[in-house]
Structure formats: C-alpha cells, structure tokens
Length: 411
Ligand SMILES: *Cc1c(COP(=O)(O)O)cnc(C)c1O
Image 1 (tube, protein in one colour):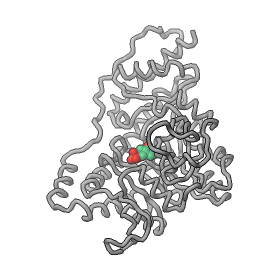
Image 2 (cartoon, helix red, strand yellow):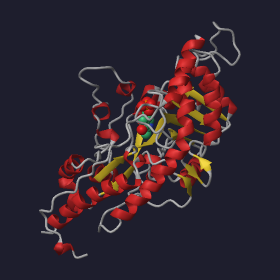
Image 3 (cartoon, rainbow, N blue to C red):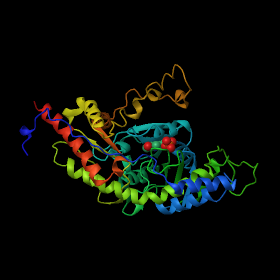
Image 4 (cartoon, rainbow, N blue to C red):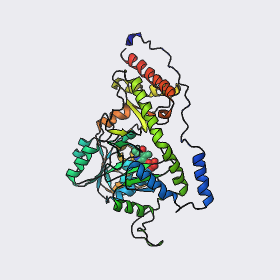
C-alpha cells in the first residue's frame, strides 16, 4: 500500500467494543464471600493458607506468604533478605513508585538503573556499572509481564555477591522456560490490587523456595511472632500485614480464571502484533521465545521519535474512538519530588529516611527511560481480554491514528 494514497484527513474508524468491566466476577466470588461471612471466621480460617498453597503451586514455588499489598510485600521481603539501613538497592527507574519507595521505607537507599530499549526491563549492564561496596540487592521488575534478563542479572549478582529479588507485580503466571516469575531469584513479590490481573481489591504475596525467608516474612506479617509462638510472644520486629479470609476466598476464585485469561491476552497480543506490524519505525513488544507463558499486564508499544510530540493528541484520538490506551508511567521514578528533593528534604509532608542519607538524585542519568516515558502507549489488560473482532477493531483504530501522524510528520 502506498503511503501517499492515505489522505491526512481520513476519519478515524470507531471501535464499538464494550471492554470487559474489571474486575471480572460472578456468583463464584459471591458464594465464596458469603460463605466466609456466614462462618463468622473472618481471620485465621482455612482460606488464607489454602490460597497461599494454590498460588505457590501455580507460580512453581515451595512457599508463599500473603500480605496487605504489593508494596508491603517488597518491604517485608527486603527485610527478610537482610537488607538494612544504609544498604544500597539497585532498582529500575521504569516502574511503579513502590519498587523504590519500599527500599526507602526500610531505610535503605535506592540506586536507579536504566532500562533496555526493547524489553523496558532493567538493563543488566547499567546495574553492573552502578554496583558499589554498599550494594546489597537488585530488584528487577518484569514490566508488563515480560521477564527481565534474569540470566545476566543473576550472573552479575553472583559475581558481586549481591541478592536478587523480583518485583513480579505485573507477572502473575509469566514463565521463563517453564519456571514462574518470582522463582528466578531468591524470592519474588506480587500485587493483587484492583487493576492487576488477579485481584481482591487489595492484597500481595511473596513466593520463595527458601523456608527461612518464608518464615521471616510470615513473622513480619504477623506482628513479629515466631512460628508456633504464643500469642503475646514477639521474637522479631514485625508489623501487621495479614489479609482476611474474605480476600483469600476471592483470590482463590480469581486464580481459577487466570490461566484462561492469560491465554486470551497472549492470543490478542499476537493479533495486535499482526495488525500493527506493517507500520514503519514502530517498536512492538519483543518476542520472547523462552517465555512459556506471558501475563501481558499490558501491551506496550514505542512510537517513532518524530511522533513523541503528538503522542498526547494520538492518545486522545484513540480514546475518543473507543480504545482506552494511556501514556503509562510518564516520568522516570527518580524524577519524582520524593527523590529530586531528597537532599534538601521536603518543605512539607512526611520526613523521608532518605533525608539524612547524603543522597542526591538531581544528576541521575537514565536516557533510555527518559525517552521511553515520552514515546510509549499502553494498551491495558482489559482490552487484551476483548473478543477477536473487538481487538481487531481496536488495533485498526490505533493503526489508523499512528499512520495518519506518520504521514503528517513526513510532510
Ligand atoms: C502495582 C505495583 C506494585 C505495588 O503493588 P500495590 O499492591 O499497589 O501496593 C509494585 N510494583 C509494581 C511494578 C506494580 O505495578
């Protein structure tokens, strides 16, 4: 097809899809919640343990410990792994704030590494460049469910005697060579908040094969009680991060839907790849043949550099045509005030443990992430659950809007 034949004034096609309302639920969740309600046993029943066993089996780990959310899961796991005040922890700058804020909360110092331009996950070479004598841990994030380069990260970590834990908050069910996300290092964490692919409104979990780490996490969630200790015996520093039987009951039902939903998302992602594949200069999510399952928390595409300035307008057009896409994370994590002002302390608000750590984030350089924050479009997981014809129609809308702008940018 000749590009010249496309008039820049062609109207955008309309997508009339009704995207699945999220979360998806039916009488199974209703029955599960009602059952808990009627037992009158809203904590310390069978359901939390049952869900933990189910999730561990699903992800392929020996142990799993639930907690209040994905943020507290990272905090408790860092503590259980022995990260302490003043340690440096290398995190990607392209993530949700929790990956970095959890490090700050426990008194450690986040060090930001750049990301790879194709996977959008942490760049192992930049990780290695940022290792110092104070580096204690690395926290890769499997962005959008694509597994980070764990071979290389584990290799670097082994060489420098550093711990690796995965923030797998986008990667429920994702697998590399048949091994689940969160099991590709010492331990991993997941989130079950409402926009995530499996949810109870809020919730989190950690998985590991190491019983000692699992026990420490359990103690931490349970007010610092040692395993099998008496109720008012508190052996360790802890908090209360327990979830309720209601949440666990919902999560068990949600987990039963997950495998089939992932299959739908994977198929629809392929469909979008096919439809957008002929647009020049666009970067689609990379193939990952070693991934035996891929959760696709979203589908992230990168626009050609010349389209960066019109991204906002494109997103508005695509939204107006019935497809709810977004810009996603629009700034690298270290560009947030919490880090940019860490060396002077905030003028108001809650004092950060970073305030007395002698850090300065104003000169951090992560050029790939800066560019990615400007040039990506996120297609959310709910669109990826649409019917084949709805997803086709959505991809055609996106194709049309990008193509019109590409033609316009060429003059
Ligand atoms: C959602 C998310 C978290 C935090 O999970 P919450 O349950 O919202 O606290 C952590 N990391 C990443 C990458 C996330 O997307």
